[in-house]
Amino acid sequence: MRISVIIPTLNESRLVSAAVSSAKQAGADEIIVVDGASSDGTAEVAAALGCQVIHCDPGRSGQQNAGAERASGDVLLFLHADSRLGRDSLDQIRLVLQDDRLVGGAFKHHIEAKGILFRLLELGNAARVHWFSMAYGDQGIFVRRTIFHDIAGFPPVRLMEDVRLMRRLRQQGRIVLLTGPLVTSARRWQQRGVVWQTLQNWLLLTAEWLGVSPDYLATFYPPSGSNSQTDTNGE
Image (tube, rainbow, N blue to C red; front, side, top):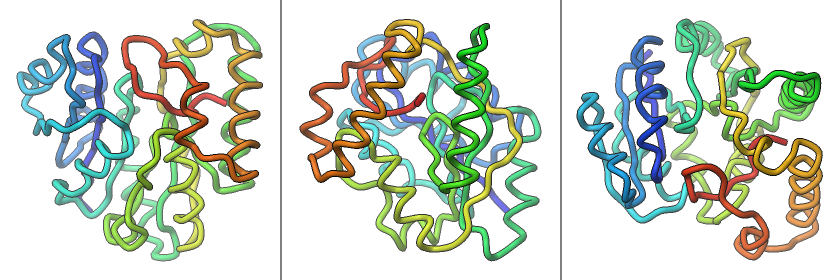
């Protein structure tokens, strides 16, 4: 079972090396970095690491779809540039996807920060996948490539593309939560505060569920860190 790791980037030259290295160490068959017009040399760093590099307009949904179009693996794993895979993460995927009833899933993650609030976030995010089959992008969503194309990939929205993908995906079959862990940066929560970040995510998700356009909601969700893409990761 071949696994393609797809990493969307935008001004992530400081972090992309660690993400790529983790995918290599985990045994990725293919690593594709999809750069959204970075101005800090991200694409050059990725190319020097031996990745396939694709250039396209910024926007995580479109970038990930572009990577999926180029990918040749049986399984697509979407990894954020501020996250790192565990050494046996891909072996975990290969093992569980021997069950044809499973269409994809995500990982338990470890947020790189100390404190009980971060541990509670990790537990809550794992419970969300376990009980509701709803993974967020910073948990390393993976999916069989045939299924991904059957559901037309990520929808063309500026925010919550991961949420909408998961809704389509769970209609196709079972979703699994793997032990991982996938290590992810705490920068979003550290910049905005754990409580405020969580409340904001809940409000945005509620508004989207009530029918408000994700493109409109994106105007209320400022970018974090060096990456100016928007997402709802890190509930």
